[in-house]
Structure formats: structure tokens, C-alpha cells
Amino acid sequence: MAVTHVHVDNMANMAAYTPKETAELMSRIGAVRGRARPDKIFFSAFMAGCLVSFTSASAVIATASPWFQENAPGLIRMISGLIFPSGIVMILISGSELFTGSNMITGISWMHGRLPLKKLLLHWFLCFWGNMAGALFVMSIIVGYGGVFDNEIFKKQAIANAQLKQITPQWHQIFLRAIGCNWLVCLSCYLGLQAKDVTSKVAGMWWPIFAFVTMGLEHVVANMFFIPIGIFLGAPGISVGLYIWKGMLSPWTLLPSTVSTTSSQSALWRRATYLPSAAVLLSRTAVARAATPAASSNALLKHLRL
Image (cartoon, rainbow, N blue to C red):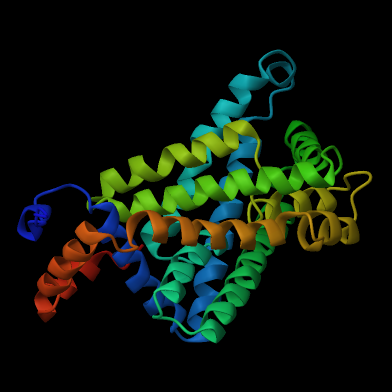
């Protein structure tokens, strides 16, 4: 049975990698990132947490309109959805480590046997706490003590957001919203890696994030800003203990659903784009032959900023 060969040379002229090449690229990037020095991983994650907080604060200010909140909530959600993707664009283009996206990338690398389990878990641990440290730094020092929300309308909006995310939803709702959110975040990272030029990367990453924000889904790193700023501003009914238990560490809430979703996304992308069939095996062989010279390998990995 004849199988069509993949013409690797023609792929260089395309604006994006094929799904198989993208899976291979993610696997290689995960191996590099997972073996980085712990301090580098932590501070890269710290920067990502800062960028998420900056974007979250911008979204709060842009949507702080009581009349529109009451009469056009869909429009307010859409405005927030148009603003928030700038955070993940800055994170991925700058090479910072976002907990959810990095989980998928290093997870695929581990599944390909390129990253030991110990390194994988250490990377996840450092990314999570680095994101937390960065988000809390911007939340408390720049936004909180800097008086960014001193305007009463901004303050009320920040408190309302915290209550909407922490008090209003049931446990199972937070869990399911986190699954949907991280599914779309992983897709955003995948599309960002698949594109070869910056404009295409931005376009690919933007719309999955727009979708999750417009739907009101829950992202664990974004909530490291939204809920603590509510506590900082005195939101009634929200405590640090409630946030840690209901919003992060409960078996049915954000942190476990984030880990499970990004892990399952790693498996999904690996199976959909990498596992062998007759055609895929031949494609992988052709790609491997083309990537053997150092120059070809370097050309494929020149996008390691993502």
C-alpha cells in the first residue's frame, strides 16, 4: 500500500507547523524548560504572574460600568474578553512560564520520554508558586498600595468580581468552569506554538482566551489576582482560608482541575498529532531525517521563546 511522503522542504514555506510538527516542537520545548535551573523557572513564572495581574487589573477597570453591568452584561463580558488575551500573548512571546500552558507542554515532553517525572513535578510546583508570587506582588504593591482601585467604582467592581468567583458558584461549578477554561488555554498555547510569525501567533492565541473570558470560566492564575484583591479591599464573606480551600486546594476546585485538565490535554494533543499510524510513522521519519543536521534542528527550535 503506497503512502504519500511528506515533503518537509515545502513546510518551510508555510505560515504554520503541521499538527505533528507542533507536537514535536512542544515536546522539545518541554524538555528544555523542564530541565532549566529551578531559580530560572521560578522567576520566569513570577513574571508570568505579574503579567496576568496587570491584565486582570486592566479588565476590572475597563468593565467597571454599573449601567452596562446591569443592562448589557454580555457586552461587558465581551470587552473583558477582548482585553484579557493580551496577558497570555505577553507571557508566551516573552517566554514566561504560565502554570496551565507549561503543564501541557512539559506533560507532552514527559509522555515522549524526554523529561523525567521528578523534573516534571518540580517544574509544575515552581510554576504554580512563581505565578502566585508574581500575581500577589502586583496585586498588593502596585494595584493595592499603589491606589489603582481608589476610585469607588473600580473598588466596587473588584469586590463584585471576587464575590462572583468565590461565593456565588457552587464547588462543582468552579471545577467544571476550570476544566473548560484550561482546555481553551491549552488550545491557545498550542496555536501560538503552531504559528511561525508573531502576527499569526497573536491571532491564534487571542480567540481561545476571548472565549473563556466571555463565558466567565475560571482560571487558577487569574484568580490569584481577582480573589486576593477582593480580600485586600475588604470584600465581605471572603477570607484567605475560604479562597485556599474552595478556590484552590479542595478536591473539586481549581488546582486539581487545572492539573487534571492540562495533563489530559497533553495526552489528547499527543494522541491526536503524534501517535503512530502508517502515514504518521513515515512522516515522523522524514521529519527526523530533516532535523538531524544541527542547522535544521536549530531552525525548528528558533521559536523557543514560546
